[in-house]
Picture 1 (cartoon, one colour):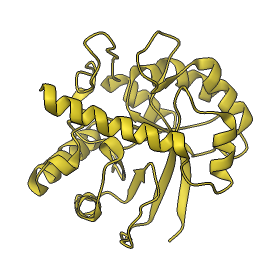
Picture 2: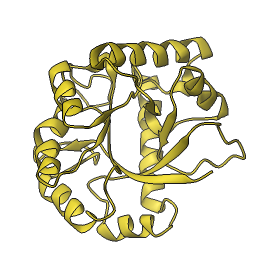
Picture 3: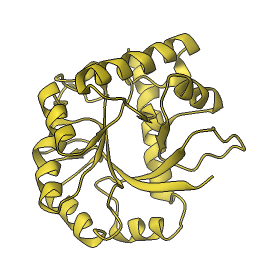
Picture 4: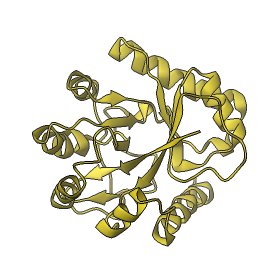
Length: 235
């Protein structure tokens, strides 16, 4: 099965932020200019932050580029209280009207789940509910089928993939090559390189040239897993 490649962003902002899951508008623009010949249909955004609409959307529109965005449906028009942010690093998520405008301009709206919980901590029934609730909400809002799903926290296994397919999604987006012999029977998979404050242009070039996720990418995934662990301890 041919695994397609894309880039995965979170926040595009010039504001002060804790952590590394954001890049400035200047850096975002540099990435678009550097890789504009191969980025068509390969720019994705997880979580559905309002900064994507306010900052990334105008830049991409000026280049005639569209994107794919995966909002956390249960946090539409809310702040990211799901995240471990110490109460001071809160960011607003998209509202319905902003999602509709992105759709109007040709962006694909996919799902990132309803509550943004790691599916490995949930029962199959809970996962199916999360998948179906988020899908139905977006389809009712957009009046069209929602086909794509980005896995929360990039934590998955064969059972989770099966449940995503069972819920009616056709495409699964994830941030590293699946290391099992299990291959889901779907139209295609999309493997993404996560882009953060510390990501270099060289590492992006290497990724598109065939390099698997490097040490930095693996450390970022480790930090995501650590965030889940901290939330378990504190909440």
